[in-house]
Image 1: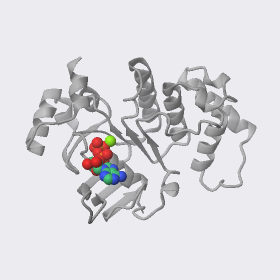
Image 2: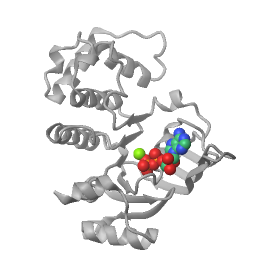
Image 3: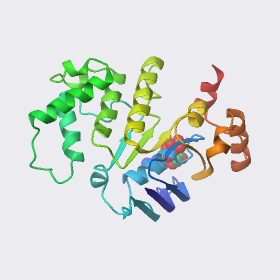
Image 4: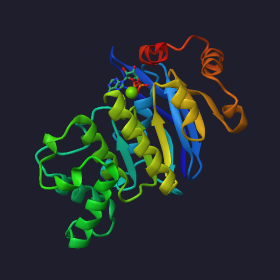
Length: 268
Ligand SMILES: Nc1ncnc2c1ncn2[C@@H]1O[C@H](COP(=O)(O)OP(=O)(O)O)[C@@H](O)[C@H]1O
Ligand SMILES: [Mg+2]
């Protein structure tokens, strides 16, 4: 479904701030693969997502999605088939527009061929209402309210819905529950699992929770210094403990994992 071949990205080339954020990065995801991604601070996880989503063009390498070369496809076009959630729940929605208008925008963006002259029908609105009911947050009764009135967790749940209402070919989740309070984070994560399982969505999910990284999905990737240093699945993954994972990181990266968030999340 997704093929990254030898992707490279350097920020601010030729300046004192030059930073090679990803190098020789290759990754193949089969349809329905759900890979968690874990790594040190600044390992290049978000940069990898940016390269896939088209926030910038990679300096080198090729990106193939569902058989189509999208290496130089504009970001807005990729967004029709790639859903992306960020850590910041304010990022995915337009605060001054209503819940219904936000859903309509997302729906029209993803329904290829119908943009830009299409309109939202009564039937579509019914679909929005049904989708909102799945969240179990009472939002179906607040469709005419501006999104800016919602809590962070409600907004992130809505963003998730917007990204998946028309199932994307690929879903990119970048620590999308990290900024939410624990109860809301759990709720959004449960919803995420449900949606991915229902649609068999191909997904990459960055997390700082090592336990989650081993339990969710079918693969675990570890990144360090712009590269994937570990890719485990199957029996090897099923038998793996968090301390095994840390040990494998040490062997693969040649150093200890230095991610304060991960270390904090393991103390509790
Ligand atoms: N837009 C940018 N301009 C300059 N440097 C960047 C930019 N985005 C990321 N970087 C740098 O690239 C490296 C990888 O960043 P990032 O992909 O955000 O890491 P991660 O998500 O794994 O924590 C870091 O050193 C970061 O400072
Ligand atoms: Mg990041």
